[in-house]
Amino acid sequence: MVRQIRKAAVLGSGVMGSGIAAHLANIGIPTLLLDIVPRELSEDEKKKGLTINDKQVRNRFSQSAITKLLKQKPAPLTSKKHLALIEAGNFEDDLQRLSEVDWVIEVVVENLAVKKDVFTKVDQFRKPGSIISSNTSGISIEAMAEGRSEDFQKNFLGTHFFNPPRYLKLLEVIPTKATDPNVLTFMKQFGEDVLGKGVVEAKDTPNFIANRIGTYGLLVTVREMLKGGYSVGEVDSITGPLIGRAKSATFRTLDVVGLDTFAHVAKNVYDQVDGEEKDVFTLPDFVTKMLDNGWYGSKSGQGFFLKKGKEILELDPETLEYVARKKLKAPSVEMAKQAKGLGNKMKALVYSEDRAGQLLWDILTPALLYSAELTGEIADDIVSIDQAMKWGFGWSTGPFETWDSIGLEKSVSRLEQEGKKVPQWVTEMLANGFTSFYKEEDGVVSYYNNGEYKPLQENPKVINLKQIKNKKVSLRKIVVQV
Image (cartoon, rainbow, N blue to C red; front, side, top):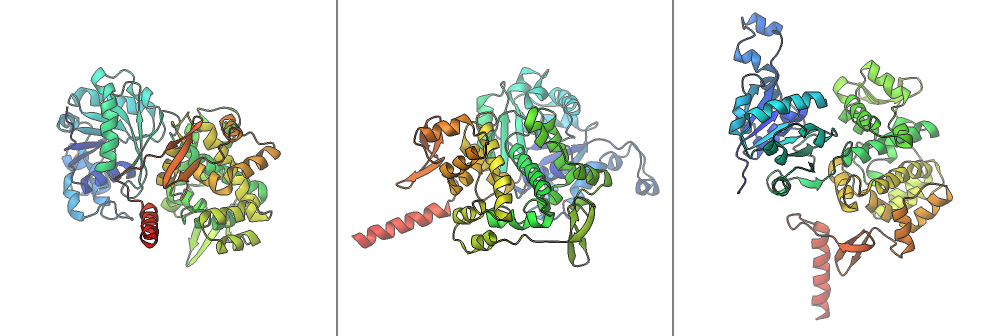
C-alpha cells in the first residue's frame, strides 16, 4: 500500500491546533480545522442578528483561530495565500467529512476522557487506512486507543509537535503496541521529508522525552535558585547562550511558554511518579501564587519578568514584587566568555568555586543524572535523548554531549565524592574503559550503547556544516601532501 497524505483534519483550533494546520497549509496540504460549537451568541453576533444555528456562529472558534493566524508573531504562515488551504468547521456538523482526509490530528484539551470521546466519534467517520494521531504532550497513547476498532488502533500513534510548529524542529513520534510498523515508518519519513522535522521515536511514558527532561531541568533550576539565594535575573544571565542554551534562558523561556502550560506539564509527571522524582515535580509555593494571580508570562503581560516602560523588571520570589533586573557577576563568567568553544566555556564554569560555578554544577548535574536514569525507559538510546533536547528546547548540546564536554570521568568522580547516585550503567561503562558517551575516529562518530560504541548513522538529508568544513580541511591536507 502506497500511502499519501493529500488532505488532513486538525481537531482543536487552539494555538497549537491552528499552528499545526498552518504548518500543513504551508506545505500545500488542504486542512479541515474543527472545534466545538459555541453555546451562546457573542455580543457582536447578536448585533448582526445571527442565530445559534448560523454557520458563521457554529464555526466561530475555528474561523476565529484561522483569522488570528495572520496576526500572530512569529508568523505561523509562510504566505498569506496559504490561509485559503485551511477550512473552518465544527465537531457537530463536519465530523462526517473526516472520510475525506488521510490524516486526522487530535489537538483538544489535555484530558483523557475528552480525548477518548473525540476518538470514539472519529472512529465512526474516518475512512479505513487513514492515520489518526494525538498531539498530546504526555497523556498515555495506549490509553487513548483502548476500545477503538482494530483498523483505528493499527493506524494510531502519537505525533507531538513543539510550539510554534513552524519553527521548532522536534517531532516526537510515539507508537502503541498495536501501531502498524509500516505506519510508524511512514510517519517518521513523512515528518522528515514533508514536514521538515527532526523526528525522534519516543516511548509511551509521561511527557515523553523532551518535556520530561526539560521540565525536570527547569524545576531543578528553580529549586537551586531558592536554595542558593539567587535572583531570577542572575539565573537567566548564565543559563542562556553562555552554556549553549537559547537566549530566553530559564525564566524568560517559562514566560514565553506560559506558566499555566508549564504547570500542567509538570503535574502530568507529578501524578505518575513517586519518591524523590515526585518531590522535584512539586511546584514551589511562589509559583503556585503566581498561577493564582494569573501571572502566566507573556500571554498575561507579566510573569517572572514585567516590562515597565523601557525597563524590564524581575520578580522577587520572596515578596512577589518586581525589582530591578540583576546579572550574576563572577570570575568564572568572565573566564567562560574568554574561552573558545562551548566545552571549554562549560569547564571554566562548572568546576569553579564561585557563585556562578556552584549554581551551574547544581542545576546541570541533576539533569545529566536524570537523563541517564531514564535511558531505556523514555527512549532506546542516548542519541534520541540528545536530539530531542536540541530540537525541542534549542540546546546546542544534548545531556550526554554536555556530559562529555565537562569530562565524564572527572564529573562522575566528583558526583560520587558528593554522595550522588550515578546510574549503574554509567559506572560500568567507565569501569570497562569507555570514557565518553561519544567518540570520533577517522571522521566517524560513534555513541555508547549496551557495552559498545555504535556508529552514529547520520541522516543523509541533514546538512552538517561542521562535517562539510572538516571534509574540506581534510581534502586540503591531501592536496598539499600530494
